[in-house]
Length: 178
Image 1 (tube, rainbow, N blue to C red):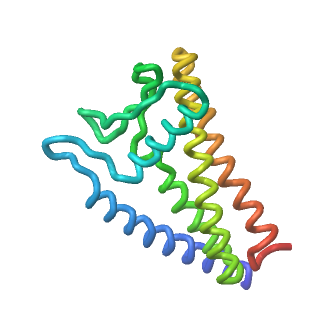
Image 2 (cartoon, rainbow, N blue to C red):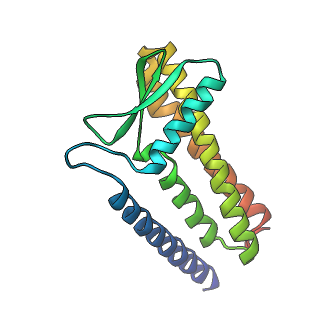
């Protein structure tokens, strides 16, 4: 009976956290995106594009970003060539919400939960910027591989990172560690 109780508690914590964070994020998106008259992405999406460009420039590429005129996305350019775009789903916030929801559901001490959720979220965000920069370079150099890179390789990087952080959390910090 206790085993089922733990599962129910996990599910309640997970979904409560997920829906609360998702509602906050959805409200933020609604108030920060512009679709009428002209398109303007949320500031976090634009910031991810800006930081991706900074990373690309650090790597020696001439890169830039501009707001897409016809959709809620930011164009990434390498050598003045439109190479990739950053949409809301690329800014890592949805993945971070999922990550935090799991951490809270498999709670450890309050202090450990807050610190791990915060540091893990920053790590996921940074990995995501590197992932987008790498994807942009790979699409620039190998445009015929765009679908494979975007649909398989790069989701594996971000979700693999999250999975490894979850394993670390459960095995080292949660109340359920062995």
